[in-house]
Image 1 (spheres, rainbow, N blue to C red):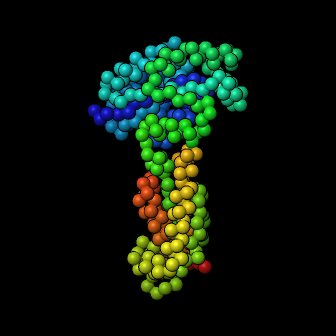
Image 2: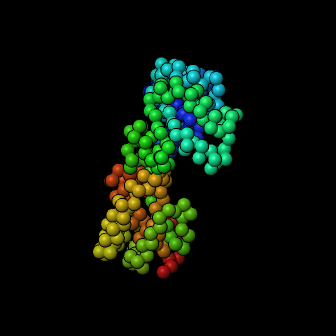
Image 3: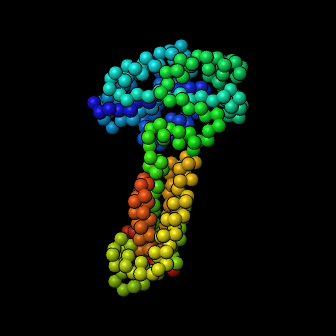
Length: 289
């Protein structure tokens, strides 16, 4: 059996377990929250039968009740089956937990007054903290910093954390709704009005040569990439998982296609996880100014 990752996320209620599971989901993990320990064997059997499930993350916490102290032993059994197992424990200070529960108005799983419930839970999960492979204190941690902590633990390269989608489009067909950044390249020379280029696209060499003969085109792509070199690390630091960059011209067939293609190539060269889509490249309509 291929060595599969099997991580357990546990810790104190209100410390960020749910957010940690979402982050692992962004990293490609198959996540399940609050799976009873009694179902672990059946779940492991299910994972073994599905080769595509190579990264698993389970959230287990005080809701498991009296069976919770048996979690490390259950994880050892899973490890003996050939899995790469890790136990990640999330905690926060009592004052922070009190504030978070007060702000969210969520009830603590233990049916006690809040301060007593937090004290009891800390005592109950102490053995899990001792057994943990990684302990993350989220008292003063932002969502982006939590993602960074988990990325370091997983040894994930920062540039691979965020999926960047580069889309070319035509303004006459509307701006893509999923856009985060939109760039208008209608200032560039339009090949549509050049004999022999109208029916070609920005992926054809003749169109590329025509557009790139203008120094404005080369200067634009250089400066736009410089701006992204500044912005992208900040988006990653804040925990952004997806970023859509849309590049538009009139019809979405020539100028925006070439600029999006150059942009995607530059981002891939820099090691970013990037996809390239030309939404309107095959739409046949009369060009507009």
